[in-house]
Image (cartoon, rainbow, N blue to C red; front, side):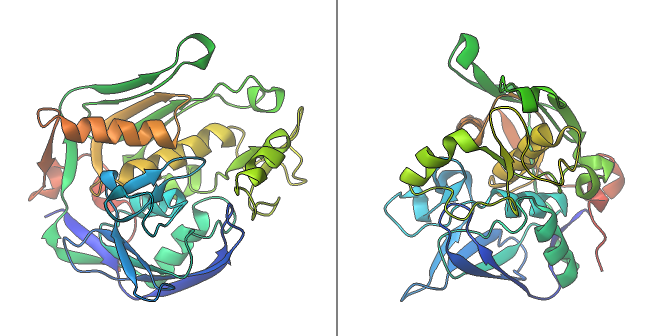
Length: 311
């Protein structure tokens, strides 16, 4: 049986939110089978649990934010996509995330630190079948036209593949790889995707900070780009790091569905908002998907039974 996974023990991290600038502590705890991933705001007078699902997303400006029932006025947790991406890359299904503020810490701006934290706690196989969300027919969301066109699509695929193309019309980004295709079954998430960092433009800093965003950003956790070049002295980690970070984000945004996907995700200039609209469109059409388990692991797509060592 291809089984669900959780952590073997708890693990902790401390950092700052890239948008809020607030110090925040995370405690990542094991959870029982079929629990899913839940964030718990422990800083509130009465702790609030926020189960992760596509309809809990309440804001997608610059990050994916969730709140109970998707209510934008309720307690929230923002910038969950990098941690969710790490959970997907390690095949984790069940987890409780205690958090002492409203934003997940940015750490180094990638998912690599979360991968390390989760692996340090150990990964435990549970006595329950892993449930996949299998896409049965194409679902697509398009927005804008001409130079402002962006779109994202889910197609049937026996496995989990993601293809993303960026187009920023910026010399520093245009000089790097514009299109990345990644197969989750390759076992190379940690090496090829997890280390890709978030990025931002100096021209947007004042606008973002006027909106209360980017207050914790620095060259320690963001690739900073002016009108011509990357300003970080160490340069890029991958020659296509910008496109790979978009793949990293998409993996996290799509893991908000609550179950790993069996699909090919294809996108052009997509982001958090479009990714969530795509998930909601899929789930709104009961003929577009089904829930699949694998009693015989050999019938599962290659690689998905061993996304990370379990011990």
